Length: 110
Image 1 (cartoon, rainbow, N blue to C red):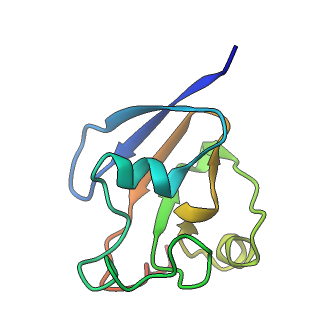
Image 2 (image 1 turned 180 degrees about the vertical axis):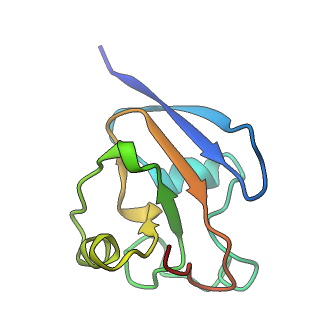
């Protein structure tokens, strides 16, 4: 039996989340894009690395209690220096709460 998890997504300026479900192992970036919730800006919508973790334009904030351990070098640096995490490098393996990042191209530090 495949596990299914809940992903609560807070859009910029919204108080209520959009709630999606995802099978275990689903890529967060893909889940967002499949539901027309792009982690990109209008500038990076077409100019991005396609989810390979190279451009850092698909950043999102994870709620602090999510404790998703970074596996990609950028996400380890993001955790250390307070930058958004890359949605393309997060697999949904638990319930998640995320916040979309207000940005022009890359997200700013907290």
